[in-house]
Image 1 (cartoon, helix red, strand yellow):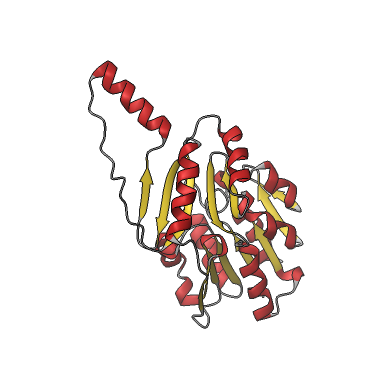
Image 2: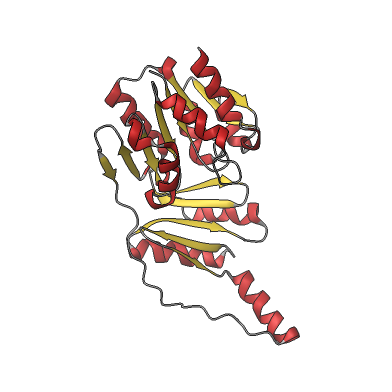
Length: 264
């Protein structure tokens, strides 16, 4: 049995969706093999993918969710969820990110809450002064319920502020998942920890393990697996960590490699 572990956004999905070729190949793969989706998304946001691929039906695969914060095994329905941020920690991170001009999205179990950054507020103020358009109201007293992770984007001088952010939040996992998108998680949280657990649980041989990823949150997995691939559109850090390259996600690069695996 072969095991394929793939990131979703920027790796497997094409513009955030599954096309017919992806669905058909992965259904065929699951008949005799194990498919693991390793993503920064939570269960609610991957449920439609699970349904499309009929993963519950095949019961061979697993999910590594929220960049390793959660794990679900379709075979025995084991579910593991690690502790994330306290509200005090979340508020501290939000304040630091806000001062560095990042647009903050707080991902909770059942909702996503996005806040305007300083740049947005300056823009709205200038728009009001010049064009007399009203300034959008924002609730500054949001109560967060079970924070899973914090996402950042939309800042000016992204690379400069990203470096400052990593220094300020040195005791957290601050990973760049795409060119202008950052995710923050508790220290030590990563996809590899859950992958190692899966490998140990089912005694998966390295020769039967294939890993695909495009972002900094995939680096540990890409370095770990002998058969690891980064698509052409991946961040340079992911490409350097992977042992092989494949075509971009828009050209179904991952699916083409999986088709070759099936034919072996």
